[in-house]
Image 1 (cartoon, rainbow, N blue to C red):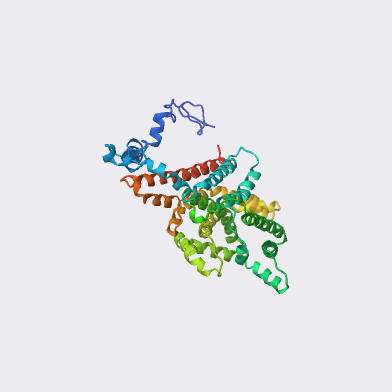
Image 2: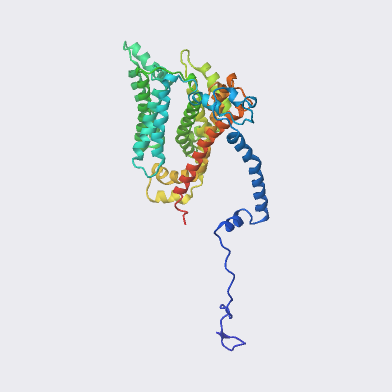
Length: 468
């Protein structure tokens, strides 16, 4: 030990020879002033951004409040209630126009005597969806089966009336019903519609199981066959229900409109795009050349075509390629086009999550002896989906807003019903247009903001590994 030259005592170079004096107390990180200093006025760029934000709020919020609330007209039965020369004051939003056209905005041209069926569909969707979104409630699997399996059949029956006469449509599309009917005619046997359907379902299930057995191995054949039978069972339930006379008045889809069409297209696209996008993402990363090429071709084709082009093709050109008497409903064609378009974008989002998973996760799963299917389902895919929750919900929000594009193919969604309401001369005022678009924007904001906040809560709940 060295000695200090001043004191003659042992000297340690790693220990300070003098006691340091007391330092000033740290600046408080709590309270109003600490928040303002840390988030609004901590530096010159923060001060400039704060002043710009305050100016932007000053020039936008007060005029909006003045127009939609303070100067707004809330009651009235005609356009006279919203004309400044009639009321003798400046007039803002004409809310009586919204009240008068509310049924048209929600139901479109759906018959008034049958609108209770639409209300019942709304109520059932809320009763089944809310428990599915609340984590603490039990019976999630049963709830999911009811929402994704039973509810679509019930909604289809209620909205259409259950009398769409689907005989021959599905089988003609598959090309299987005609095959069985042809062989039956040669043998002197006449198959019925449901006999054709059963035979076609059996052949399709066997074909899917055989392909999976060759491509993915014997262990994938049985789950694939069960999944195919499940889908065909739901489809058979829809066809069987539609083939029965339930006493409900048939309502053609051309009479649907407003919020009903917006929700039908958005929910269908969201429900189909997520699982189909996951399958496409897995197919694009597959080691099987055929599966990989087909997945890449599908994704790149649909991502390279604008949605407007897809809707135009599905509405006006697709009927030209169908057999003589086959006719697919216009709304159904739009639904299929939107779902396939959204699935391609969803596949790329999910693929980004799969590529973000470290290689050690795959190696750890293989070290446990998990097969490739179990490894993907139990280890890799849950982590990948958790990472891309913001991207998935962003696709959902974009899809919900893109439903407005169906107006160009004469399908009246919420925005289309609003534009149709503007043509009523009995409500032609200087503020009707701004009131209608403001109300439509508010509706879209409520749904999109709700999805965004729920995704943030879900992401926070699942991010347990990074909690401190």
